[in-house]
Image 1 (cartoon, rainbow, N blue to C red):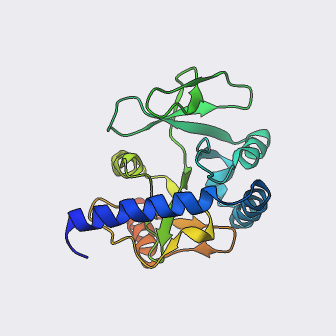
Image 2 (cartoon, rainbow, N blue to C red):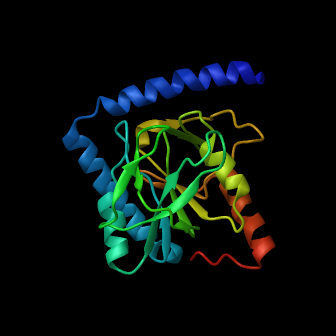
Image 3 (spheres, rainbow, N blue to C red):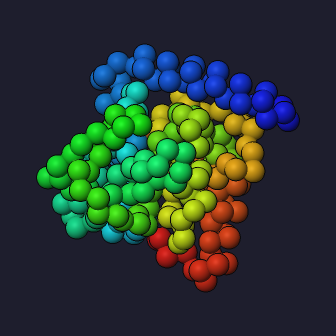
Length: 212
């Protein structure tokens, strides 16, 4: 597929299919898959993950990594949640702690910190609905993560997290799609060709890859 309208329609169909499959998992299965995913994150353990991490509040059957992030915070890391400040603009990240008072943002009704304390995570855990072997992420179609990643400097190390059932041969990536540095599922850690190119560009710009 080369036509963007055709690709967009295909993505919409795949997104609906994968969300339905994910929602169809039992709570016990989702819990077991999430624990396996968290174990792989611990084993990968980039240094930046132990210093400053952006994560997400789970919805629609996404892996619930709040216990994983809570443990990072208890060990000394700073954590932040994404916030839509202006619709269709890059996200902001606001500092979160387990004791933080929460409110709900107007766009999706997802809990966010009640107090605006901006943060710039070194590592970002980005939920994926689907993903492909090159390291590209299929999200919910709003474009918030792509806009956010394109605007951030320095760039965070981005780990797409989701279930292996979301694997696709390709998402038919477009120029606005930004690959993840890693994709982590309950079954594996994937670093695709596009992700390798992204890391190489970061090393060239910064002179090193300080995340590990």
